Image (cartoon, rainbow, N blue to C red; front, side, top):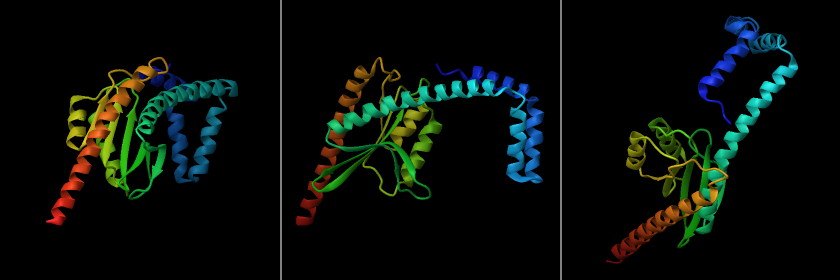
Length: 224
C-alpha cells in the first residue's frame, strides 16, 4: 500500500535526522560553490555511511515497491483504454514519445485509424488516481497537446473523477471526459473495461460521423 503523504514525509524526516539533521544536507549543498557537483555527491555519500547499508537497502526496497504499485495501477487503466481502442479498429501505442515543439511529449495512449485514406488521431490521458484530478493537471494536458506536431482529432481524459473547475476547463478546451467513479484495479478491471469500451465507442462513432458529414459538405460546396 502506498503511504499517505504525511506518513511518507515523517519517515523521510526521520531518515534525515539519523544522518545529522537537515543542517548536514545544507552544508553538503554549499560545497557546490567550491568543489562542484562531485564534492556535493561525496559529502552526501559520507552522510549515508552513518546508517548501515542494510538499513538503506531496506528503505530503498520499500520505496521501490511503492513505486511499482503506482506504476501497475497506472498501467491497468492504460491497458484498458488501449484494448478498447484496438477493438474499435485503431492502431494503438502506449507511453509513446511523440514529436513536439521543444522536447518530445510522452502520451499515455495514442491511437490512429485511417478513414477514407486520412489518419484519425486520438490522444488519451489516463489518470488512475484515488484523488480527484484538479485544474492544474488539465492545464498541463492542454499544454502538452498544443505542443504536439501532429494534433489529435480527439482528446480524451479518463479518470476516477475531476474537480468541478477541472471538468469545466477540460470541456471548454474540447477534451472529452470519462469519469469512472472508481479507481481501476485488478479486481474491477472487467467492469471498468466494459464501461470504458461503451463510452469510447459512442464518443468515437459520433466524432467520426461529424468528420464525415463535414467532409461531404465540403465536397458539395466545391462542386457548386
